[in-house]
Image (cartoon, rainbow, N blue to C red; front, side, top):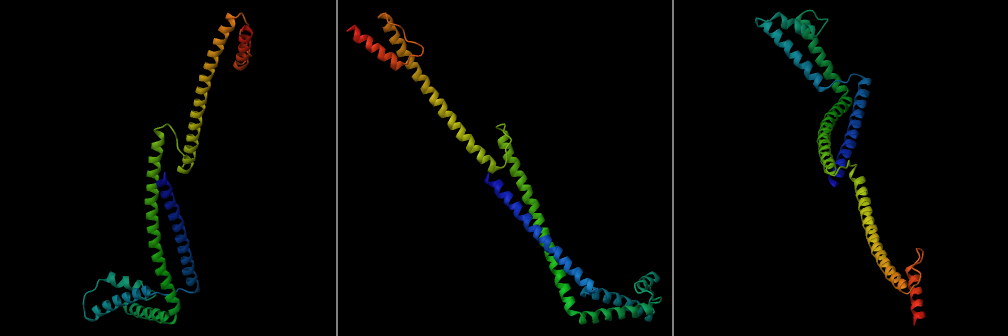
Length: 239
């Protein structure tokens, strides 16, 4: 069944491609970790997160300056993010300082930052490709299972538990050859039986003639040719 062979090849190909992709992802992870060992390389995401917190602090400070009411839980929550600060002003200053430090590091370590950003982007793309490969692999494996089950059902109807299509093609060829050989054997046997009947018929006829002439009947080991030769000789003598 060519469909099984094709489906099997597809599954094998997808498994190979997915393994290569997983190896690639592992290598990307290794490079990312290698960069992190050199130092905790900041990212634009880190900077934006600090800027968002700084903005949050500014809004709290501004609200106090404008005499607006602020929930104490919100103020304390902001201060805890910038310990050991104990008051809002200190925490706000710390948020400004941390954002500035990250921005300065981003400028100084632009090459490392760019490399890290590139690797992270590649990892995201590779992850999506791996997910797509795994999805297609599951679909292909399901298709292979369905085709294989249908293949098995076809042979089970004949009381045969099949192997792979490649093996069964060889089995079918051998079966056909054996069937043809058996047919040839039966044909030869049929012809042999017909010939034997004719030989027996002629032996009986010659025996009857020899009996009428008071001659010995054919021996069990006497062939038709020998018997025929003897009968001719007897006839010549009678003449």
